[in-house]
Amino acid sequence: MKLLEQRILTEGKVLSGDVLKIDSFLNQQIDVKLLDEIGKELTRLFKDENVTKVLTAESSGIAIACFAALHLGCPAVFARKSKSSNISDNLWTAKAHSYTHGNDYTMIVSKDYIGPEDRVLIVDDFLANGSALTALVSLCRQAGAFVVGAGIAVEKAYQGGSKLPEFEGIRIESMAKIASMDPEKGIIFE
Ligand code: 5GP
Image (cartoon, rainbow, N blue to C red; front, side, top):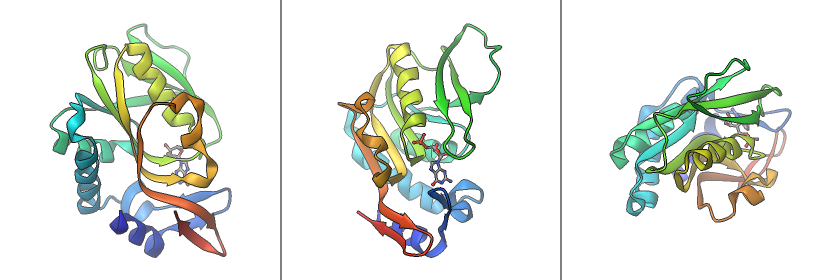
């Protein structure tokens, strides 16, 4: 999406440790018009898949999930990120490693909201090494739900997350694909 690429180029800040900061329109302040366009584009791509749930992880994926769900006409569900091991048994759980915080955590979602009847579109703000997406796919597989695909706002393609064997057969659509990123040389899209 040219619109998103343009915003990344004008407002994105490349930090050390391969982190792109886009707090001004996605990760803290939210440009709802831009996210509406992302929701529409994801709907255009997945409209024939009979999506019954859009699943994401708190917190930055939630806004994207809401706009996609609005246009697809289904609920948005977000997995919580729990640090405690005191987890009730009506939950699907999956371990993940946080790219930005560097810690391990457990992603949890109630069994009430994802089940075998569901056709799930997973969305997230970033795809880097693939840990968050792996956990979201795992939650769906445990629930017996079918993953129709994954819609990602920003994929740092050079980090290779989308190539993990866990995602074989899963259609991954990224609205902006970064081929390389460097604090001095800037951002190059695929
Ligand atoms: P992965 O699990 O694929 O390694 O990383 C994806 C998750 O880490 C996303 O949910 C996102 O929250 C966070 N993340 C990864 N890379 C970046 C980045 O460059 N900038 C920001 N703001 N978050 C990132």
